[in-house]
Image (cartoon, rainbow, N blue to C red; front, side, top):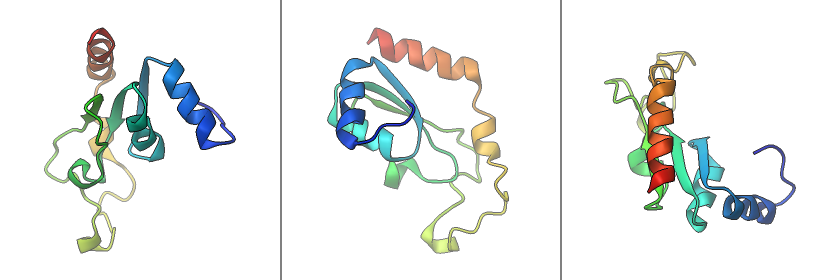
Length: 105
């Protein structure tokens, strides 16, 4: 979305847009406060604990056995060394398909 000075501006943008595609961060959670459809990428973190609460949000994750690899139990130490293969295997065509599906719902 680019730079916004205030959370209020971000929420106003979400009210004007039809779809947000984002990583597992603040914007995905703030989008839950608005009517925007949202696709949220999860890889090293777990969507079960940190996923957005909106029924308009869809989590994109690879389902790889090693994902999620970051947790309080392993002191957030991952063996993939920042490679994030779990995110790299999510195909753009899959994301586009899900985006079009969310836009048509």
